[in-house]
Length: 517
Figure 1 (cartoon, rainbow, N blue to C red):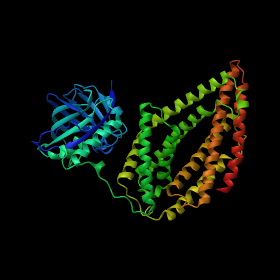
Figure 2: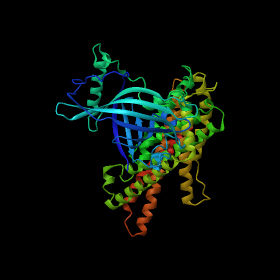
Figure 3: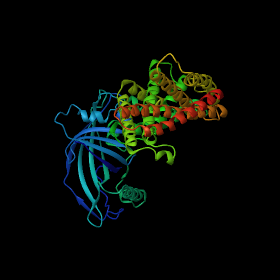
């Protein structure tokens, strides 16, 4: 079993030999309760590249104290961390599978190794309010940290620090008010912390101090590209997209409800930068694979977003009068079918997240954001780069839209024709939406506004057409099932009529959009 809770804490440096300050009267603290000292022994793990540290995640095996076990901490800020606990295992040299699984994305699928051993002599003081209820816990720590890499110094690094952590159940706002009161006290000339030489810790975590000087490739960064260049805009956009994606990806992996349409938009944005602006990145096979993986991620998340839309809209007709004609059984069957499609689509996304191409994509995003190395092509002005992108994207979108609205091949059967039409329309849809996302990176100051709008119109039209074609596919399949089972199919016909109308309208609009691109 695992246990997850929110950890809200502040760390202060305290000189050796200094007495703990009197905290009575700070915030809501009106009493203290001193506990017996304890000994803690923790080994921290990371990849060879220190991917976990770079992602502001720590994993450790700790003995001693009330919470001995394996711990994963994810930092939301310098004060707030989400902590996940796993049972202590007897094998100190092997990370449990459950811990590895929970860290799959942050470790980029790589194995873990011990990087630092930290021993702590801790004395705890419970901080109580006027009712005698515990508000927080103060830990006075004497720390010794020994790096475990080949280049580690032989002498452990030692220091003293004080951690103040609120207890479970304390409101987050109350916790921050307490820390603000503590900060105000030691910032003042007569502050209790300042009186003994204490100050907020220069480094927030023991691990970061213990790793000082370690060869950590992921922690090496490069300067941002120059302002006014396309490269600067691309790096800024990728940083935002990576952050958003990792939040959404965590929800998908954990089984939490995710906004599938936002997930698809984020994945498409990544594909737009790595694909449409391919010359901005190194001409390597790894970069080619990352762009291909980004397109794959965009495709699989787009299918999930489409399935999510059908759950919301397909069981209902477009007008109240028509909706009254849809019987309850038909609606329930359609709803069940669309929910199953969505579940299958989400499983496909999660499966993609466990593949090697996806992990390579994450590595490429890390490099592009943390260590940008733009090409000369990208270091030009946005307008010049936009001209090159337009020269490629415009004919590509036009060709795929033309294929999507071309006349049917009467030599193949109806089912194959419909499947071919859906596939061609999906290709055109993704191309148009990716092109629009690519243009959004530099904006219509760089791209001609008329082209930006026409590509956007084509994307909107194709979105509606893809939705309608997939809706018709669901309705036809389940209408046939209902008919073979002796059930009525009138409700399916009502819903299908809506979608046929929308499909026809979107076809005409797509042809019009094609002529304008």
